[in-house]
Each structure stands twice: as structure tokens, then as C-alpha cells.
Length: 455
Image 1: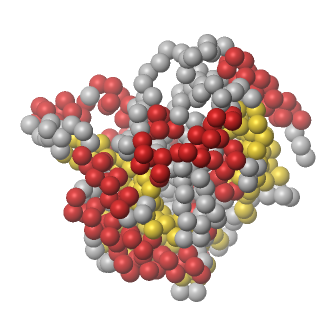
Image 2: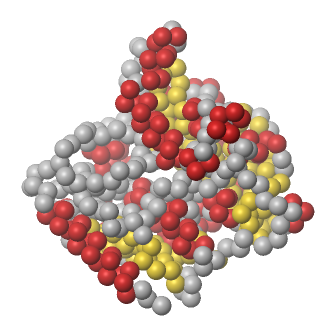
Image 3: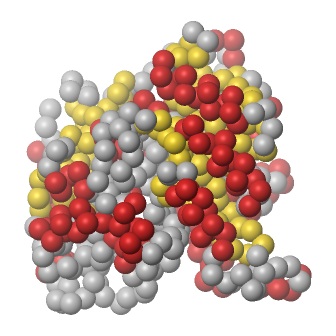
């Protein structure tokens, strides 16, 4: 049943958004007034007022009959999942961090373990309202220029205020198998076979991702939705004393509630919580369970950036200064072993996350080949480079290597492409044509300026 009050509140929130846009003087940048972020690139600070999206953070309605949900653009996946799981449903792709918003995942390309069969979050969007640079709300659907150019536009074409998305049924538990490989080529072959058949050794696979701990220690985690606890008898709890990524090396099978499976990586920010001591047994006992989550670590990271803590400690200890290497890249699955070999030789950061994906069709601003299997490789940390290496040599080398392997790099973090290369990789001419229609006065920051020049 339609909730008339929820729809009324949504319309009131859109009206406040429009009013906040009208209050921004001409010539000043139009940005969101948003307190949280999952981006890892700093931008030029401005004192200009931002767009008021405070009323666009909820789920308008969930329809179990059609397996769809009407969701506001600034709704976090944490809130979205709570609403859909109550109806036995989940979004087709749930990105791994709780505070990623649905609108953010669509305009900035989310991914997770169901992406090998369901693609990326924007591929399950049936319709959306976009607040454009012209101050208008445009309803757009798949196949229309604004809709198709929106994924990977990062707000340069506007902001989603409402999205209608597909959902899929899910039972109570996720049964996991951690399969070890000592060779990246064999892991890749197995990954490709699972993506092609949807199963492994006769057992259905609903979720698929992996971790490479070293060149000869790699794992695929195969998740199967089930209502049966099986021989386990109880579910594991990785929001407590245990750490999920270590369990891949410690056990071959596992069972989690679906909710815990969806947030298995959030509790320890994959493995990055170790930088704050949160994986030390004593610290973990003292660290409140409710504060073991990615947005808390993000705030701590912000404090480190603000006060230059890590660099000060390195200088005091006489260590080389660090280069932050926080990236997700995608390469064709068949080229994964090449990339990992290059990465081990030139970067050496481990572990790294592996997540296969296949898109249903080409998308102009992130043109992967439809139907082909790619692997997202995520690596997040720092490398010592010394004071002479001031211009991000490691990140630049990664960009070049990914380009050579016919891959792409996600734009949520630092990027260094020249304009010509960027436009060729990310459909720059096409996006510019769509922007000219929906943002004729150029009120929104252009994609290259936002992601590379960090304006």
C-alpha cells in the first residue's frame, strides 16, 4: 500500500532542496551540504552554502509484490537494507560499507559480491528523479541519455533525489566456503567458471569475492543463501572479538546471518581498522561494538589528515614519508594474474580484495564491455616513498598499468590522468553533451575538474 505521508514528506524535502539551490548566488559552485563521505580525494574548500538534502535520507516504500523499493537518493544502504530485509528482500547489489548512499552508489559505481551476476547498483534502477544543474527535477529511465550517462558522473550531471530499484528475495543465512588457491591463474579460471555457470562443484553460488594475501595464498569466498544452519548450528559473529578477513585463512566453511554477511567488511573496514589498533584483542574488547564501523574509522582518518599525525610520527622515527594508495581498479578477468604480478613487484601491498563483475550493457561514462567478466581489485593503505617522491609516483604507475591492461580505475579516490586520456577512458565527450542539456549554465563541477583537479 502506498504511504501517502511518506510521499508528501518526500515532496517537501525536494522543495527544500530546490529552495537551497535558489539561494546559492550565480557563479558560486553548487555542492551538497553533506556531513559524511566515502570519497578519498580532498577537494578545494568553499564557504558557499550547499544543497539541502537533509530530508532525502529515507525509504519511501517497499513493495514486496513487485519486489521494488522507492528510495531517496541520500538513503544509506544501512537504512535501506533494514527496510527491505523486514520484507525478506535485499537490493540486487549492496555495497560493502554501511554509509554508502544509494544515490552515491549509482553516480559513483558501487560493487559487491553479487556483482558477478547482478552487475553494478545502477543496473537495478528502474527509474530515478535527478535534480539537475538547471535546478529542475528530471525523471529519467534506462535508455534515456541522462539516465545512461549518470553512472560514474559523480554529481557532475545532478543528484538523484528518488530511485525506484529492483529487489531480490533472500533467506535468513549466508553459508560460506573459503576456497584456497596457490596460483592466481587457477583462481581466475575458477572465478570465470562460477560466473558462467552460477555454481561450483554442483552447489549454487549467490555471492562471490576473494582476497589475495600473497602470490601463493589466495581465496575465493563462495556465499549461498539458505534457511538451513546445517552442521554449524550457530552463526559466526565478526562484529565481536573475531575479525572476518582472518577467518578466510582459519576455516573452510562458515555461516552468517544475511545481515552480518552484507556488513562483514564494514566492521573492520575490510582490514584497515588495524591501523587504529581495533584488531588488537585488548583494544577490541575496550572499543565499543557500536563504534566498530567504517564511518568511525573515516572520521579518525580525517583527524589524521587534519593534524598530519602519521607523517609527524614517520619524521620523528626517521622513516621515509608515505604515499597514500587507496584505489579500486577493474581489469578484464583474464588479465588479473598479470596485474597481481605487476602489483607485487611494484607496490607490494597485501592483502587485496578481488570482486568479479559483469555488466549487462555498455555505460557511456564507464565503458566496460557488456557481458565480459572483469575483476575489481581493491587495495587501501600507504607505501613509504620518501620526501623526494612528492608527486604520487605509485598511484601514477598504477594508473598506467591498469590502462595497459585495458582496465579502468574508480574515481572515488585520487586520479592523475591528463584531460585527453581521461575523456577517452570515461566518455568525456558524451558526458559533456548531456551536461550541456541539463546544466546549460555549468553550475555543477565538471567530472574531470571534480575527480582529477579536485575542485
